[in-house]
Image (cartoon, rainbow, N blue to C red; front, side, top):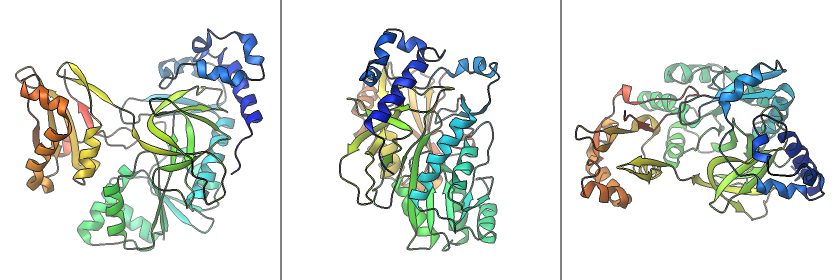
Length: 410
């Protein structure tokens, strides 16, 4: 893909800013910018004056419904489990699927492929856009429609002769558990394309071990329902490296390292300097594929803080714990509770197969978060507690992602 010209990008940004001065979701954010300045040749620089924020106030979505505009609606819950409603015009949806389809082609999906997808379209997911994007590749789409019964998924993949899987990482666990238990493999699968969440290294190793195809390729796309498709991988991209969809998105990286996205085409619910929650750096190395679009390298989620013991504490170290002990999201949950003493306590729920490592995990926790260790030492926080994971300890968002950290305090 060729990068967007600076002139074209600036014109799109000016048009977007003018639209946002009148839109009910964004006009307050542009209240301090004189309208006359938006018509200047370098008015794209005014975008830097708009304070970045998280997703727009979706509780205002009901006002958009009453406008009776031609649109499609769905929601995203991310890792929080709380719905955030999105409205796209049909033109915006098709524009996004055109770019998303290009991302699938870049990942390696071709007309000759039979692609099994696990999710199904509904108000609770953006799966419809996935199927429309796949249509751009010319492949055959096999909508499995569920991700919880490994036996059914395996049977359908085998009977329908799927050779590509397009799946969210969380949705692979039931299939892989079944394959491991029955000692089955899927050597016909040549490509797995993931999206929606990070594919952990431990899960990659498990996929390669169980599928039975040494030539299996793994690729991914980068998108959020809030912003649309953001990045794609060519065959030369390393893990977590993506080309930016420059004709659709304007990407910035703040001094804090957080990626900020402005969608150049959305008008129904404008995406204006939205914080993605992802840490990134620019990847300055020219790509061997010849694509001249800018590339980013995702470095993980932006710092997530939760108040424990009266102080906000980064909790991203639990992601490092999962990688260190090869814990998968369906084998691990963190419950923040109020102890009988009235103090906060972190309870880890871990699958029984890791019982022998509980002491090592306890020591790891104490060594990798000095702030929590100090609060435990002075009795401001109760010591860590590790229990055997039960089925009721696991929670998923309505889109299927596991909610690893659950705050169960009153």
